[in-house]
Length: 403
Image (cartoon, rainbow, N blue to C red; front, side, top):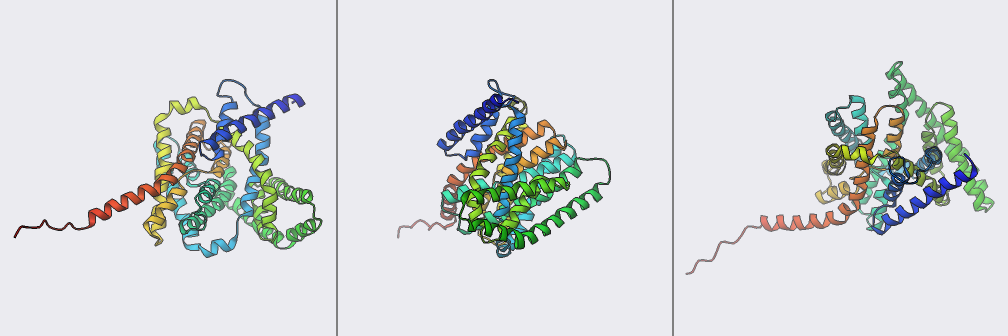
């Protein structure tokens, strides 16, 4: 690719992301929706300019590594210990129930059990980015339902890592699947332990030395080096680069400079993550979705209504008030960015086909569109319904009889 072609494609992708991101912002929607639509706009399935898919995918690979590195940096083990019941057990229950429901619906679409289970796994993960943004906008981040939603979302993010690990094994029909899964999980476990050991000893010392220079540029280069170095290293060992970046983030999170690194690293994460969302949008064929209107509607209902009910039910089972459970369900009734990573991997590995991929993407897009409105108007409708039920439950006084 010539320098001029690279510049044109880069410029077209950036402008499309700018315009669609601005439109999403004006409509009070997450800008992620705009970036996904920008990918559709410059993708191969819509008329007009078509951006170079290989270039966008290359930039997206960096975006995936940076995104998971940032997610890892926000993983604090003490948070899980404080909310271990509803966070860990509730999160596991929610993911399991959603996978089961998604698998049944996937089978009804005519897919095999492997694809159906993978479909359920994709819709089980919510968007931490969207949930946090909505909680911050409404100043509910420190409310009880906000803390529960974040705890469950964190467990969902952690469960994505073993799914990324087992994908290559599931997608490879040759050999022993059970042994392959055990080997992959054992390798990831060893990497996790090694990452934590490095995070406790070497990485904090390294970051402390860099921070003492007082140079912001050197600190930024240190963050990029750790993220990409770990991703490349784990890829060389046969484990996904995304897993390596995540484990590096977990290691960094154990040090006292993790928040400072997250602060300086965020602009780079956001810049390259935009290309990841553009690359996801470029793979969406609107025509294929229109041909599968019924299945697309079923997917949207599963993601929004089904997931809301499951999250609310699980939270209620753990002893929380009905209103709190409903609010937690509203904030997590969407599909997030990590599901896009899994969907892309599943497509390249042949676990899902183009039709199921398109349904997943349109379901995710619709859920992200609907979620801000559900969070905004859901509590109001809940209060009105509660007042009506309360009024109906009050016994009416018998009419007065004239003496």
